Image 1 (cartoon, rainbow, N blue to C red):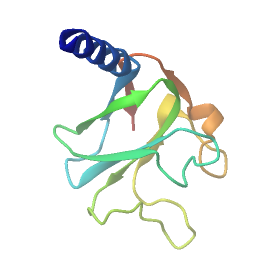
Image 2 (image 1 turned 45 degrees about the horizontal axis):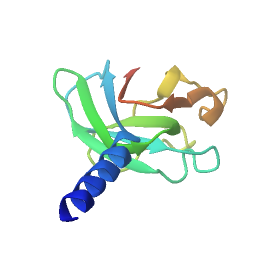
Image 3 (image 1 turned 45 degrees about the vertical axis):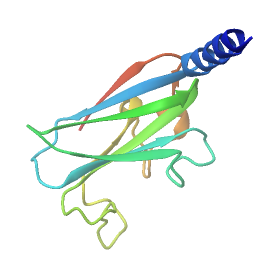
Length: 135
């Protein structure tokens, strides 16, 4: 009986882990290796650029940074990233509110007179995936 329970638990655990995916995000084209790259992952239009679902930071090597989000449920996501050159933990802006540090979004989404939209930046994750963002 103990063997049956153990096998059942292992089977259920393997099914649960099979539903989660790993997302590797590569950010390249950075102008220097100073500071860090911040990557925000969003899982809805309502939270995009407001509240991250998950966020990671990475050091920069050879003008490139890589982060990996583990255990993501299958679904729709979008990414916003920026080069935090002075490592102050925020996207710096000038007096007019325009970002003074480099930033980008998944799918190379660009905004017109404002930030990119979730609709332009969204993508699906159903299995282990990779996203490349070029500044």
